[in-house]
Image (cartoon, rainbow, N blue to C red):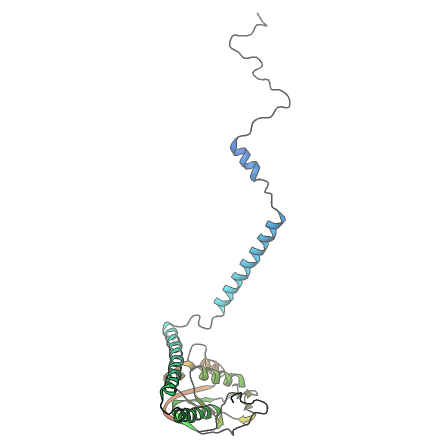
Length: 262
């Protein structure tokens, strides 16, 4: 009786055949497929390139944000700058319409030769103003820079000139020297030269153009006036109803350039 098995008890219930394996569950198979990760060389290269690209974009965005000249500007200053850009766009559009009107007049004129002559004379006068060979007058501003500490350098005056040009200045004179397309400034504080002609403080810019555009262009945050004042210079901008720019440049014949018109 001691060796007789109890009824209903399966034989070898606790025995397992040596070398047999348990069947894996679905979750175990998923984990086994994902880990350890199998990464190819091509995937590593793509991941590295994406990392470098993202890092470069982040650095560029941060640099642009930190170096913005308008960062921290007041709302009214930003509105004024936007108005200035709108005015520049409007000036270009007006010039486009004026040229189109001239072309229409020339095409529709009964005496095209006479109309062409009138337009040529007018164009010559305009070019003479730009080239500095004829005097000009009109509304504008005077910019006066006093430099008691000789801190104003040539590049600062050049920045002022460029800002005035961008704001629509049509004729400029600096301490009796007519400014033209190839005008340059050189020298350090107290020894500034314009077109190789020495000028001394106070530096006086006589500028013809729209005063409502010229004056704000000089007073933008971080602009010409603030830069000069950091060098202990005093700056005065005055709007003038009719200013005369009469310093002249002799007409110069180009050494090599010739007209391509027949």
